[in-house]
Length: 405
Image 1 (cartoon, rainbow, N blue to C red):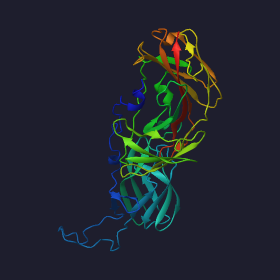
Image 2: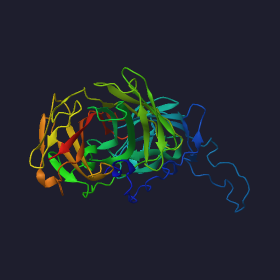
Image 3: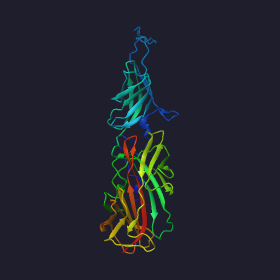
Image 4: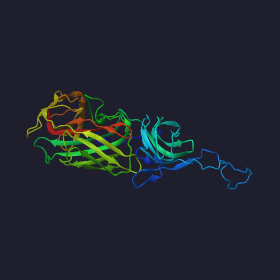
């Protein structure tokens, strides 16, 4: 249970997409990037007239064009942006030319709406598309036409679904039982193919539910891997944090946040991730952290552990404002050297929850139980390239010890 949260390891290939961990840059087929990081497209001219052998002599000489004029050559040098969602409606500026009032534009086989034109730029609205893919962009005028191969990439529309998942968290130890009670923080996130998923679904099948460590989540999350090895998250106050790509866990992570890097009741933004094989990724309001709160029952302070029973394991806390509260109870063996079993509960943040006796496969008296009560807030912003949501949670956890009776 604890490791599956971070490994995201049960993935299979998704039809029409690269398998997990592959380089989606292969889908774009751009020719490269200029010094400003803009894509360089492979452009093709399509003559508006048919060049004919003017003397019809059957030879293969270099006869002049039959129309004796210049072929209409349209150049497409840049699209900004060069991606959008399958819903269409993206405003795209096409640079190149020469363009005029007769210009029509197609994205693949679908016609775009031309909003404005100049001799060297067109402003169009992207049409909808049937699925995630790259398409050619073709511009035609009365004088000629030109195309840019695989110049625009369609992402599946992610509205109402998660496009980023992860956790920015802080842990505080309570009581006099710890060798090193120093609070610590950690952060991680993954860039995922949009899906209706919340992080707490890794722990239990629903809110106000509990399971033991024999339960396994059924959700499969497909993760994009880009070639940027680091990213930066930045709170509205406090210090920024550099996150490093972990290829084995398919996530950006930092397991050693300082108190300056974790701020309570604070919004975190994701600085733009620039890579050569994917679109820019940035999120204003990646996550918001909760305020501090206290555990009012069982008591986790002092040097005498509170006693809990299987039939009466009540957990109470102060405040509210979280989307959920995650309660984790880890029972140790009789020697106190290893965890025998764990129970995970996802509760509404209403101040109280009772761990049901049925959640335990066994409950021996006189055992140490590590109790973690973690408030989670999910208030992320929009992921720009596909309109999905950031469902990276901000969380604050109180950690203490009780004894079974």
